[in-house]
Image (cartoon, rainbow, N blue to C red; front, side):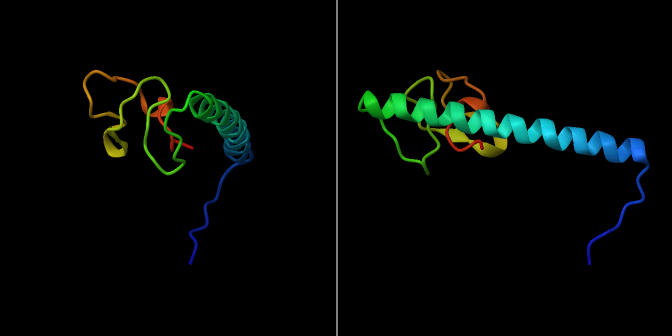
Length: 85
């Protein structure tokens, strides 16, 4: 059974605005990732939609729970790796 919350109008509005902003962000990220994947594929670099690779360097050791790459030479955030969205 789903829990029901009693929210004020202001609280409902805040959640609705957050949802709209996050939906827009997800759409933008999907478009950016699609472009990044196309560039990598055109350059004959790996393009496996299920692999956790970086869009900015050739690392292959991204670890989701740590929100960073396990390879010290990468240092790119979770947003910079395939599979974030």
